[in-house]
Length: 310
Image (cartoon, rainbow, N blue to C red; front, top):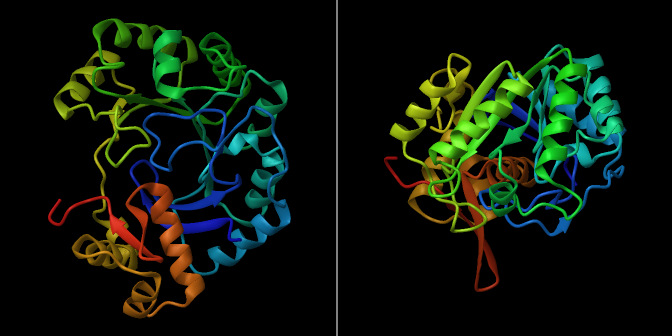
């Protein structure tokens, strides 16, 4: 099983080489908006899910073929559930100067051992959606042991211990956490956590639950102004400039799959890829939510989550 995928275009990181440390879909949350799908194993107990040496060797081989902007520990589950994520981070940093990013839901940093494991990362990108426990539970459907106050306390302690950059992602869902009360409450928590950046996001691709509705850009702009200079909108997908230049294969595939569903053999033959290369391409784009998988008459097809001309 491949643990490394991409690089794929990221709205926040440029070209991101993804590292998938957790079996799909193992997480501490079951978020309404998740583009990877519904959580099948909800847990707060870290385990050594995949061998560190295998992951690091895959990263090393990938770096011989590409020059990503970031190596991102994320994938199809919550990466801080890997009990040896610290070894993954330090081992990768021994073989490359590329920044190592932890993309996390931020739910486990109340555990001192989890906080300590991520301190060598260059960037940590946790998520926050509400200052109110009721809204938090509605959006994230967390593991029973989790509550909002505990999570925020963990993020605050991480900020105190961590010397790298923290980019705090705020995910807004229309009609759920976009009221004046919600936004004012978030600002209080943001001031307490004190991240380097505040990144505003919303649903841009099909979510796990149809109740997760996208917030319009005008409202996001109003929130950005209210939150101040650290805030930026990252909700619009961007595949321009350097990303397209370095991702011609990805852009070609996305254009093809916008026009008609493709079987794995179609993808491999059209793009002149081996089975392994095709699977790597598909995995990254599935995790990022650009495409989805569908079975029909016993065959697997891949479909675009974006329309032609979008």
